[in-house]
Length: 102
Length: 485
Image (cartoon, rainbow over all chains, first blue to last red; front, side, top):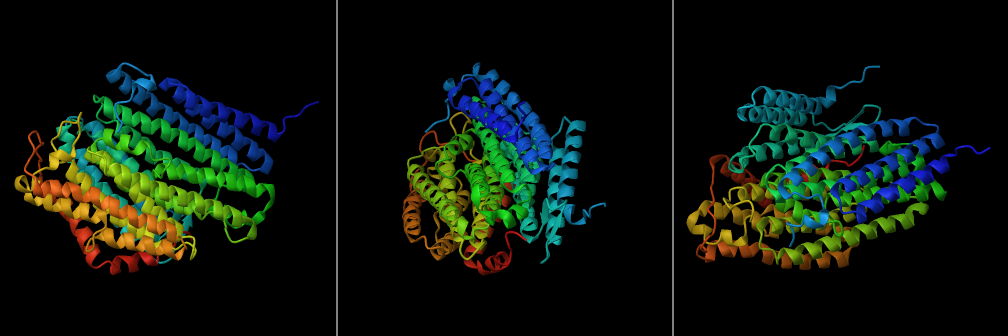
C-alpha cells in the first residue's frame, strides 16, 4: 500500500509552482498570466502544508489561510486592472501593450 | 490572556482612520474635501502617537509577531509625515488630472499602514500580508488615471511582476519554515546555525526572500519595471513609491538579511554568497542607473533611473551593515535624506502643466528662472542634493554609506560608486543649466506653483539644507537605533 508522504506533496507543490512560473514567462495573455500568478501562490500553499506535516506544527496551515485571503484580494485587484486596460486599449495581449519604453 | 495593545496605538489609530475615511468618502461622495481632511487628521494623530511612544526599550507583541521599538515608531512617524506632505502638496495635480476623488485618500492610508506594519513585523506571514497590504493599493494608485492607457499599463506591469515576486517571497518563507519549523524571524535567527541539509533549504529560502525584496527596491537586474511604472503612474504616486515603499522595503530587507546567524562556520560560505549578491546588485544599480539616467529626456524616467542609482548607494550601506554587525545608521540616514529630496522633487514635478500623454520633458524646464525664479531655486536645491553637493543632505548621506562600505572592506565598489556620482552629477546639473542659462524653448509647458505645494517644497528644502549643514544631530539620534531586539 502506498501512503501519502510529505515529500510527495513537496514535489507536487514545486511542480505547480514551476508551471505557474513557466506560464508567466511564456504566455502573452494577461488573464492567463494572472492565473499563473495564482498557480504559483497555490503551489506555495501546498508546500506550506507539507512542511507543516513534517514539523507537526499548525503554523503552516495558518499561513495557507492567510495566503488564500491575500490571493483572493490580489485577483480582485488584478482583474480590475485588466478590465481598465481593456477599456482603453481593447486588447489583453501583453505584446501589444508597450507604450512605455525608453 | 488578553494581549496588551497599548503600545500599538499608532497602528490602531491608522487602521481606525482608514475605516473613518472610507466611511466619510462613501457618505460624502460629491466632495473630496472631507476625506482629505479625515486622512490628514488620521496621519497627524498616528504620527503624534508614534512620536510620543518612542522610548529606549522595545516591546514584542502578538505572540512575537509585532515589534514596537524606536526603529518602528520612527519609521511610522516619518511615513505618516511623508504621506501628509504628499496630500498637502499635490492636490492641484489630482484636480488637474481629474482624479481628485475621495477613494484616493483611503487607498493612500492603506499603503501607509502596510508599509508601517512591514517595518514592525517579526513574522514571515505578517511580513507577507504587510507587503501585500502595501502593494495592492500601490497597484491601484498607479492605475488611477483610468482613461490613460499609460497609467493602466504601468499598473498592470507593476501588478504582474509584484504578484510574481510576492509568490517568490512566499516560496522562500515556506523553505525557511521547512528548514526551521518556525515563521518567527527571531526564532529562525537563533536556530540557523544547525548545519546539514536543513540549512541548505534555509539558505535557499533566505536567498529567495532576499531576491523578492531586491525587486521591491528595484536593484539591478530587477530594476526594469521602475522607469515604466514611474512614468505611467500619477506623479504623486511615483513620489510615494520613491519614498514610503522604498524605505519600508529597505528596512524590511535589512531585517531579513540579518535573519540568518552568520557567525557559525557553516554559514561562512553562505555569507559570502549573500555579500556577493548584494555587491553585484549594488554595482549593477549604480552603473545602469547613472549611465541610462544621462540619456533620458523625460523627467520622470530620469528620476526613476536616479532612484535606481540611490538604491545602489543604499546597498553600499547594507554591505557595510555586516561588519560591525548590524550597524545600520548609514542606511537609515540615507533613507531619511533621500525621502526628503524625493518628496520635494516629485511635488515640484507635479506642478508641471504638461499633458499627461507626453509627460514632462527636460525641455519644459528651459528658461524657468525667468518664468518662476523661486521654483528654479527649489529645483536646484533638490537636484544638487541628489547629486551629492556639499551643504545638502545628499552629501552627508553619500559620505556615510561610502564610509560604512569601506569599513566592510568594499574598496572596489566604493571607487565604482564614486565614479557613478560623477556621471550622475552631469545628469543632475543639466536640468539646472537648462533652467538658468537657456531661454524658454517654444512649446515649453507652464508651471503652476500653488501655495500648498510651495509650502511643502520649502519644508522639504529646509530639511535638505538644515541636515546638510548640521547633520550631526540626526546622525546621533539615529545611531542608537538597533535593527532587531
